[in-house]
Image 1: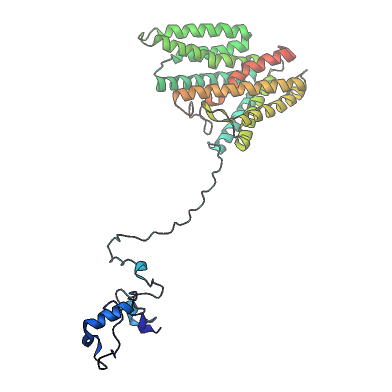
Image 2: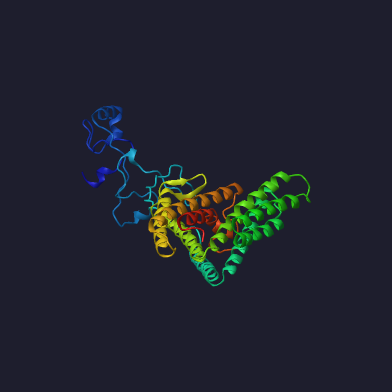
Length: 378
């Protein structure tokens, strides 16, 4: 079939040949009449109307509606007319879905400025160790200052978030006095100072209107017990002959426990420990805290504490990991109730003083008691 045979006639079927039976040559269909049309309509089929196929590279490539060699050849495959510039097509062709790039894997982060946290931690450690082994009274002063700042952070957050107005003046003065009394007079001095501080809070609050009195003094008594009373056990540890080493063991085991929990939990943590209280803590992290603290406890009791033994250090490390974790969860519960992330902003990378005392405060009486049982009070 030649090229001309692909062109569609206007009548919808092929016209008559030049010679029609019964007519002279050249007369055509016009002379054949209706009889010819009926005769040929029964013996022929209409050919499909197809677009003209231009020669590649000809002028017809630029004409409006010119067909391409790659275009369809049948009516049901004819493409829709292209819209003019600025006109939206009513039947747009579906576009193939472009492959979406794979999401980049999320890296685990510490959630804080790790550089600032390390720098502040090293600085605080240097101050504590220097005061601990140079002048014991200076270390007691450091503890008293930490207690006062911690009380200020706690009472400030209670007033901001809950409207609880705890009298800070008697609380701060009594808290510092409790630490000094614990160092100078032992447990008896700490108990007496705690009772007097509680009474001062009750009386001081009477100078304000009675509305909310019970709420405010209840929070004040809680603050007295939570911060200065627990801190007095650190001062009482210091009264022993090897008190500086006992305090150092207490600090080391607490820090090692926290570090072990963070390192193991960050790397291997998948099972949440208490998701409603602290979503970041995992069971794997707790196991890391226990393992690290027990190893550190065995070494500390064997080499730093007089008459200490490695197996005592294992028990001490286990107790420290448990108390430090509970203390951390306890303050997390308080902060969740208050709707805050940190108690303060005094320590870059750490938050506030209370954010560093959360695991130390409940661990202090545990270490003090076990050391008294293992090696005696002095």
